[in-house]
Image 1 (spheres, each protein chain N blue to C red):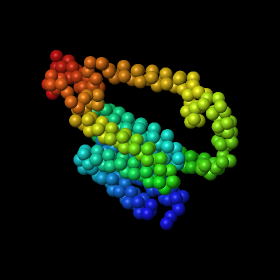
Image 2 (spheres, rainbow over the protein chains, first blue to last red; image 1 turned 90 degrees about the vertical axis):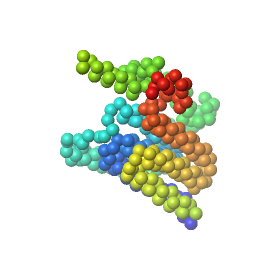
Image 3 (cartoon, chains in turn brown, blue; image 1 turned 135 degrees about the vertical axis):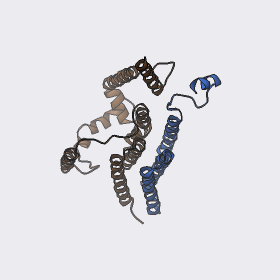
Image 4 (cartoon, rainbow over the protein chains, first blue to last red; image 1 turned 45 degrees about the vertical axis):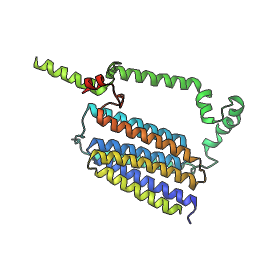
Length: 201
Length: 98
């Protein structure tokens, strides 16, 4: 019988391996539909990792946005553009070098970090105890993250929501979302047909 | 016990990823993605019981719901190239869209 800790490490290691395999497959494949599906799997794998790191809410957002909404959005983009990825004319060595150097720098940056979940980490000793003590008394919200987002940083969250709302409206106006005929693909096809007719005339 | 489940789960995940990579048809890939979602549900349930927090099952159930909805969305997209369209349509609308 193995201990839960060992099992968790084994799960993490295997999930990371699958993550790397999926990423390599995404880079390798030219068939964009498969790439979109693999991106969904990548997102589900990250969600599994987040769950095993105890960040259940982050995992849920990752699964809903990464595997749900973005898959559909990317399929929508594919319907408007191409189904095969074109081969890049540039050599790969420079980007590969940049990636390797950045990755090495990031790993180097983690070396003097406190161990995962350590109670002495600065994040646990700086303002967190203060919030843990004040939140139940001041706001009455049982979840501290929710209390910080919706109460202590209420105006900030309102501003963020306004920015996202404005961005969505702007994108929808650019794409021509009319209320009678709610299909972006159909609108695009119609525009293309109109253009062809214009060319003939 | 947990080790056997873990091993089975990971082997299945790998097989599904291979199927996703190899294809060959579109529906193999849709089915593989759907199976992978189910495997994630199982993984979260397993993690919950492994760390003795069976309430993870609720989260796993939410994942099952998301997985179902996104599979329907993908399939709908390939049938109609459109997500906002209803699956059942009034006859005159169907004629117009044909």
